[in-house]
Length: 95
Image 1 (cartoon, rainbow, N blue to C red):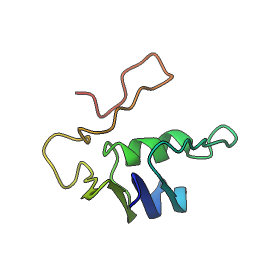
Image 2 (cartoon, rainbow, N blue to C red):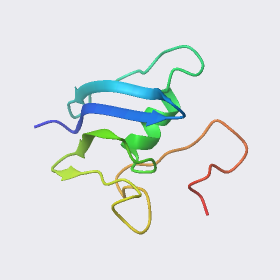
Image 3 (cartoon, helix red, strand yellow):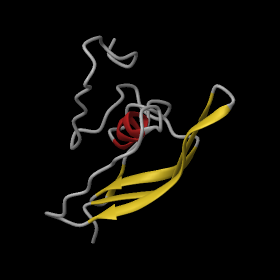
Image 4 (tube, rainbow, N blue to C red):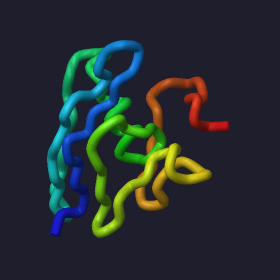
């Protein structure tokens, strides 16, 4: 059983893909690094994993529960995932 499973996650916005067809799984105690150039979609992917941004395709599973995006629940976010931005301003999903 995977701790985290990201399956075919994509986000289409502003007439381009911010994230396209990302899939991976993480086993308990396994560490994963996400590295790419600025603007490649790393933060967006992490926001999708945290349930703060709704993907246009794909699913995220944390243990046995599907992580629902803000289009599927009143208060965005998943209780088992925390997202801390490296930016000083509040993101658009905080308020």
